[in-house]
Length: 282
Length: 281
Image (cartoon, rainbow over all chains, first blue to last red):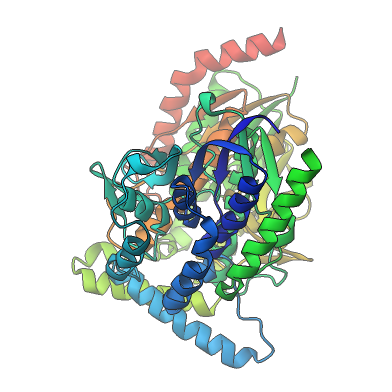
């Protein structure tokens, strides 16, 4: 392993919590991280790490976080290909349809299904008075700038607003204004923020959770569109991973479904998987 | 050296491909292979079969006289709906159908249109080797179709996901090739092209957004644009036909797009000939 690396962390939705285990393992192996580039949920975890705090403290926070918004996360689960495939298909299909109706109604009439107010309080609880300058480690938070239609990296802005931009998943949360530009989460474009890395940041270590395809073929047009989103995200990620000098594949968690109850499991599997990868290098 | 022409997808903007081919023929640039995605597959297939642009124009007029192409635009009513509530209601209704069925529209009109153009002709009947490009939802791969009836082979390539039902072909579930390869340059190289001319119909992303779906749609377009850019960058020469003033869903009015395709390609000819010359040498 080189002496110090730039770490690229991402992952869509709850899968992003794997970064807790990754950073814990990095810290224990005394890997010198010179910068973190993070997107989505990983940007919250990276901020915690950059403050010198134990990221593990966030595990319970995210369990509660996802439990609280679970009802509203239908769209996210849908986008991740979480499909009604239980044995009692008629009942699950019906509940699936009802949730779909509410998702469409919300998203055609509003900018998002969840407003910022209560989420803002959740973020304040962890990062209340902290400024970007309080971070002990440079942190770049990836987002999509809606006026440029491309991935940008946010640095040295209001920390809470930047974290909000990182997790402002379209369809779920409203865009966030940073420096007069509206921003949304970049994870739907590419799970890993690899599009705007600088040469000076090399060597770059990207932490990837390999994608596992849904076995059941899509049935409804909405499922087809969700599948296409995944296909394109995978294609873009595979292409952009060429920008990393080294990639850690967290194979052990790739099979875990997008299930919010899985967060502690995700964290511990990511921890042991990173340990294994780091041990194999030394 | 084999010169290939790779025609990109882009709805009604694809009529511009006719003008592109016109300019290439006029300049004496001989095309040895053609492939295409979506509308690119229709125009490319028609030229590969007939090598006669006037006949293609006549066939398109016949399609327009027979089929209500206006129906391909699901939101055709919404432009007259100044009231947002009504438009959102229509959007939600379409969303609900999309949640129950694998598509909103059936293939009847598409098949009818393809049959007017291609009759019962086969891929093996084309004067120039031709392939259509689609996407398989089972394997997540781009699929190259070059056997059987042209109508059957091009239909999956134009099955826009979310709008049309996917096309089942043996074990494949096929939709529009634009999902992964809107300008199928690498696929044409695999078919044996040494020099690929790529024709791209860029889709401008709207500036404003009103609801969550506008945002989801925008990210999807960003993804498509990124991939398309990588594909076009890998071609030996690319022509971009920028049609900002034309509605991508207006299939009724084709002559202005043809003219713009012709004009744009004429301007690109010197660059194209120079690169072709270098490749020959």
